[in-house]
Amino acid sequence: MNIDTIIFYFFGSFSIISAIMVVTLSNAVYSVLFLIVVFCNVAGLLLILGAEFFSFMFLIVYVGAIAVLFLFVVMMLNIKINPIKINNFSIIPIGIIIFLLLVSQIISSIDNNVVLIGNNYLVYTPWLIENNYLSNIEVIGTFLYTKFCILFLVCGLILLVAMIGAIVLTMHQRSVVKKQQISAQLVRDPRGVVKFVKLRK
Image (cartoon, rainbow, N blue to C red; front, top):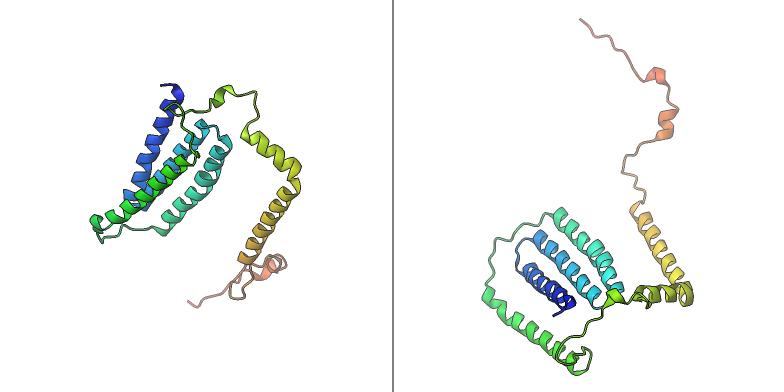
């Protein structure tokens, strides 16, 4: 058993345990934290299998954006634990159905040679020693900035317009909101700011 196999089983076992914790914990904050752990383990698995681009995209998009957004929303909403207890035996048939569907998908993918297994053991890509070859990131970057550069710039422009539109929609003027008028404060007469009033004894 080589080091790649050990790391594969390490990340795989931790991802399975973390996924079980996500669906079994009653606290939503802890579930989101374990979901982040699942994403990190899956990114490690993709990195071992040679898909470093998808691994980094997993970390940037899912962990850095979506999971953190989920965590902030859950913490801001202050979701409390539901006191109503659900019978676990009523959920078991649904879990069995989903499990059978996943197993059927895995078996069909193996039959269609999507997952290649040869000589009764898994073959991994030794990406640490393949420095002389072009990586996925270099190939994707070459295509994006040469052949598809116009489409890449158009996508960036669309995202920029969407961001500006969201800012404009959230900054609409309302007449009922009291705002500070800087120009009126600058042209005021300082002599009339303080007024002395004599009180009767």
